Structure formats: structure tokens, C-alpha cells
Image (cartoon, rainbow over all chains, first blue to last red; front, side, top):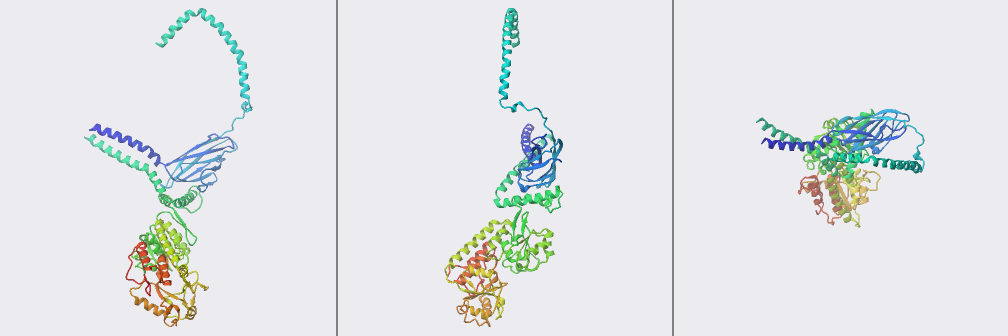
Length: 200
Length: 406
């Protein structure tokens, strides 16, 4: 009897776990932010994506770090409002929203922060902060790859340099190989044994 | 023993929680289904209005702007009805009227609005009325017993506010005008809609607007189709016929030989007369509500005279109506008029002319103008009362004198 209940309970528990997973995801409002570049170059434009879950109608208010500038968004024009470093988005059945930001001209660090607002439940919460660091890409001498046909010339040069070396090595091996044969009988036998032993 | 009890309890508990969570999981699907049942225009308006309100809230709460916005509770309530709500219209006073949730408490400030609300199936939501509804228990058996907030011309605002309505319906040009009502009620967040539900040309559009606010579009469509049907019938029947000259007046004309009230251009009566194939002899006068002398009427020699009688929904006997007609003719020396000679002086209830009874009014006028037409006004009225107002047609009542072949 107990075993039956245990079995049934386990089955129900499994169903419960399966039911809980999507529900928890659906019930708890959340927004996660990802940047297309965590270390954008100075004055570059990068994207900020907010993935929304657990609420269908409400809003997001993002605070862009000082020095960074809001550029554009794919969100409908009547559902976005920019005021200084803050950007308000109205959410109506959106699962994600995306906007572009211009990084400052100089190297700088900053933090994106924001809040979500679930209008149906009248609740609000913070969106996890996202660090951003503007870094100058190290300047180097002009890259060879920018020269057309450079790869081909390089390959040919390498082959030309390697060819005598290969010839020299081939000749040397032929001489070394004879020597092995001379003293190789004993080694051969040893090698065979060793090989056989290794496989056993 | 304990283990034996614990396991079934655990089993039932888990089953219960699983069911609850499964229900929660399918809720978005149910919401999506609700969305699909809303027509595109309603959903588009709801989305636009809600987006605006949400943005106002975000700007006020999170960007520190000093702007008017809905409270968290109001938004929460409205969002729970999305996409059926918010609903928004532009009323006849060119004001934007928005309702954020189903309307449940209505105050009607004229009887036309009372009829419209009844046709739209929302009579049970009326909590406040004016005298013109109280005086019509025949039309409004239940509504006429609701709280009286004044007359159709003057309202006791405090009394109205105490009723805590979520919609007040009034006229824009007469009585308690929408602008004035809005000014009084805006501080209490009570929406006011101004609709002229008496003008035959405006009724379909006005009723459609009200239906949007009351979420009764289907009922409005049914009524408008019914109106259109009779409008078409009357138009077809009177087309090409020789138009009779008509003089229209009201009970106040009794005993007067000068200053007899009539209806000029721009009045509902003038519109109705034209729609039914008559020529209003006062239609070319400059005043909207001119007053004329008995001699002027004599010189115009109308073929038909119609006198509207106020505060009555028909007569119990012919003698009552007949005496009113006789009283009208006293002292005016209209014996030689075509109308008098041919016994074409009619008395009709005022209520038949205005408002939602428009198809009855059209069929009645058309039948008076052209008695040979195959139109039965009594049947139209019966249909109106029974199908749209929900009351039994009083077969023993007289709605026009002399009697028409109905």
C-alpha cells in the first residue's frame, strides 16, 4: 500500500516539478540586460537588449551611464520616452526590447541600471546592473592582411624557404635510417615485444 | 499508521498545487484567446490609450515629471480588462471620453439617453435619473424608480456625485450641456459623455459611440440595421409622390391666434417631415423655432396639420385625443384649410417624434402624409417596444388621432 502511494506521489511530484518550471518563469516578473559589447570602443555604437519575462503589460525605465548617449530603438515611437539619461519604455506584450547607445569618446566605465514595472500586479523591481567599460583598441602597425595578395606571397615565400630544408632533412634521414638498420635487429625485436606487450 | 495518512495527504496536496500551477501556466493562452475575440479597432484603441496612460505613469513615477496620471490601482484594474479596455470615443461636444473598465453605474440626464441605454442592454446599470425619465414609467418601469438627481435642465451635482457613477450621459446643446457637466464632475473623475440621441440623422453615430463605451456594439448594430430598414422602406414608398404641405405645432398652440409655435429649419421635426416626403411650410423661415399667426397658416394653406402632445405616451380613448384636436382649432378660423376640410389635422404624442423611436416616427408621418402606403406604424412601434425596450406593446393605446389604418 505504502509503496503504491510512494510511487504515485513520485509521479505527481514529477508532474509538479514539470508544471512548476514554466510557471515560476511565467509568474515572477524579470528583465535581463545584455550588451552587444561589454567593452565598446570610444564613440562606438552598441546595442542593449532587455529580455522580459513574467509580465506582459507595464514598463521599463533604463538609466544609461553618464557619458553614454541613447541613439535609437526598435520599440514603437509612442511607447518610448527619453529624459536625460533615463529612457522609459512601455511594455505591451513585448518579450524583448532593444536600443542602441553611443559610447563616450574617451575611455570610461559605467553601469546600466533599470527597473521593471508590472502594471497587472502593480509591482516593480530592479533589473540587475550591467557594467560597461569603454576601451581604446590598441593601435598596431598596418596589418599585412590589408595588403591584397599578401597571403599568397607569404605562402610561396614560406614554401621556398622550407623546400631546401625538407630536402636536407630527407637526405639526413636516409643516412640515419641505414644506421638504424645496422644496429636495428636487436631494437626491432625489442620494439615488436614492446608493441605486443602494450596491446595485451 | 501516520505514514499511511501522510502519503495520501501529500498526494492530494501535490495534485492540488500541480492543478493550480497548470492553470496559471495556461492563463496566458486564455488571455491570448480573449485578445483574439476583440475586434481590431477596439484592440488598437485600447493599446494606444493604455500605452499613453502607462507612459504618463512612468514619467510621473520614475522620471519625476509633474503630470496627471492614473494610480497604480487604476492602471491595475484597466490592464486586467485589456484588450477590451480602455475604450475611447470623441463625443458630440468634441471631447475625448475614456472608460478604463466596464461601466457599471450610469446617470442619464435625459430620456433619450435612457432609451439608448435600454436599447444597449444597460438599463440595469442606471443609478441616477432626471424628471423626464421619472415621468415615463411606461418606458422605464425599473429605471424610473432610480435616484432622481434633478431635471433634464438642472442637476443637483452633489446628489449626482454621491451616486459615484462611472458614466454620465447628457446632451451637448440642450438641457444640462456636456461641457458644463464635465466642468462640475471632472474634479471627481466622473466621465461625462455628450450625445444628441434625438436627431434622426445623428442617432446611428451617437448610439455607436455610446455602444463602444458600454461594450454593446452588437446591440447597437441590431438597432441601427432595424432603423435603416424602415428608413429605406419609407424613402422607397414616398419617392416620386406629390409632396403634401405640412404645418407642425404643439399643445401650446391651443388658444393662440398669434405666436403659434412651429418648427423651422434645423429642427428634428423639419428633418423628419422631409425624410417622410412632406414639405414643412415653416421650413424656409429663418428662425429655428418660429412663432406664426393663424392668418399666416391660412395663407400657406397646409394639406396636413400635426400637433405634438407632450408628457403622454398615447391615449386611452379617442375622445381624449379628439378634444385636444378640437381645442387646437378653436378661434383660428382654419375651416377652409385643406387640412381641415380633408380631416387631416392630427394629434400625436411628443415622444413618438424624438429619440430612438425614429422608425415609428418615420412610418407614422409617412402614413399621415400618404394614407395609401403599405406601412403599419403600430406594428413598427410594437416591434420597437418589445424587441428593443423590452416592454409589452399596449394594444389598447391610441398613438395617433384620427386613427390610421395600421
